[in-house]
Amino acid sequence: MSDSPFRTQTTALPLSLTRDKFTIDETLDGKLWRARTDTGAELVCQRLDRQDDPTRTTFITVASLDTGLTFTLEGPLGEDAQVRGITTLAPREPDAFTRLDTGYFDLEMCTGTAQGEGSSKWGIRHFSSTSEGVDLLPSGNNAIGGFYGPFFTPENGLINPPEHTTVAIEVLEWGPILVTLRMTGVIPDGLLDELKGKHFSIEWRFTYGTPWFSRRYLVDPFETVINGRSVVNKITVGDEFEGGQGELVFDRFDTPGGTRYRDGDPYAAQLAEMVTRTLNAPVDRNQKFHAFRDALRGDIESAHWDLYWRLFCAWEQAIPDSEIRERLGDVRTASHRLADLPDRPWMISSGPVDIQHLGHETIFPGAAQKTVEYHSELGRAMVWWTSQPSGQFQIVQRRQSGWVNWGTNGENECPELPVGVLIKTAYGQYASTWENMADQLETPPQVTVG
Image 1 (cartoon, one colour):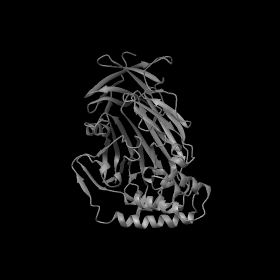
Image 2 (tube, helix red, strand yellow):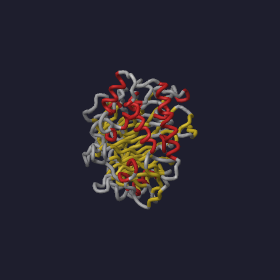
Image 3 (cartoon, helix red, strand yellow):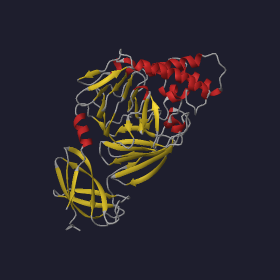
Image 4 (tube, one colour):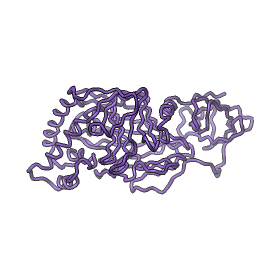
């Protein structure tokens, strides 16, 4: 098929590797096809298993791209053809669904165990770039990709889906160029009737050699009230990272044009205080409560944050539902008042924010589509682009515990990201070029077929 009429032209912003999805007006068989650029370079194209139109065929390839590229689809590769692409590695966690070497990332996708421990979370539980070789989640007790409010805010006495539920993982596309996985799960019921019986799904896409991945969250329709505000079909997506006590994976945060933010987290302080009061209350308790007390005894500031939440989770049954409502009602009232006091004004930063020297090592930035957390000395950076802005964020860089967080929520755990938004996340040595990378995440290649 050297004289194939299927020619594809791609243009994009300068980027070393870009994934290129294109559709041919003909039904073609064969999982992998060879394409040839005008300069003679060979490309491998993967035919998608999910085709929108039975009379047409959609492929995906990954190409080096500066300003434009033209290539010709030549013909199918044999089933025994050896091509470079995404491979699997031996997993590290017992609940791992797969561990992928994407040619750029080494990541482990887990289903969770619903045992209520930090290591019970579903999502990406180990993550590194193959060139750097530094796991951003070495303990396996945190995860990239969990989604949170409104379903388990302690304000509502609800629960933590990454630790208290499992997901089923379905393979939608599996090949050397593209792996697409769909997670599905049911959010365990908490104390609010309007949030019971809700299902969710997350579609993850990984492509060979590219420094980013994408995901999209879908949740059954819901509405509730958080932080005194109506919340309709908005969620908190949370990406966690860990450097170990005294170390930070990322130590700066920024958005294009500077960051508008408030620092400090009165709610966190109120919750921590209520945890202490509850642990010290002279009341007969059950075995589960004593397990939490033992885990939280000592330096509560360095304890895993999820332990705070879990003490007040209806699922855990460490304390009665009536006590959860009463204690968290006190937390809610105090937190709402403190969040609205004028002693925490909005700040406007013209450059990156050094969060670790601010109140509670936490800031709440305003609306943005492009955000970054990076390490000021090592140059590593995580860049996020969302197809719609999140109304607010919570960014934590807490050196005591080494925990770093990127969350799409405002104060008092109020979720701000609309359901269904596409999230693209890049990682690499982008501390000085992150805005360029964010622009490229925003602008997909333009493809024409002739």
